[in-house]
Image 1 (cartoon, rainbow, N blue to C red):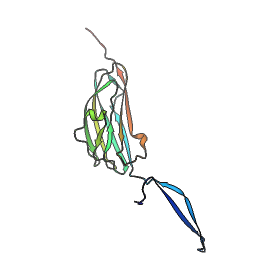
Image 2: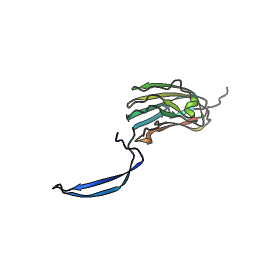
Image 3: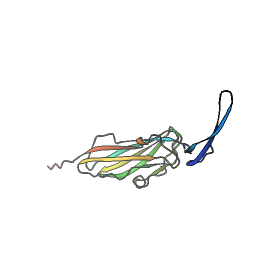
Image 4: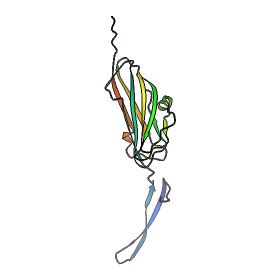
Length: 178
């Protein structure tokens, strides 16, 4: 800890010495705004249901993995999985690894709303959410995205890997009569 406040402007006075230790004049160096780096956590998200296509009216299960490559913990990270056109999410469960902890009883409403808070996500830890869904689209594609955000006061040096999307082709069910 430097003891310097983030966002504060400081002026520095320098005095130069030459090799013979002759003292030079004082000089004021231009004002510098210091923003000390806070703790950093590289969160990453993957999402898949393991298939390229789904049948209209069928069920599928998405696996969402949120991992923290560190170097700091990201306790309080928020995971979201917004409403996706053509899907009706039906269930969610969580498993943790590497010292991480799952939220108590996560719900679809939380995932699709403000998000699920991961209480413990140390460097090297991960949480895996299994999200069940029913395909309501009759045709076309369904895309489903998950995201993770670091908690307040924690920066992510690689924010581009904080979301993942799984897209499937929807196969129409044939109506076969006998």
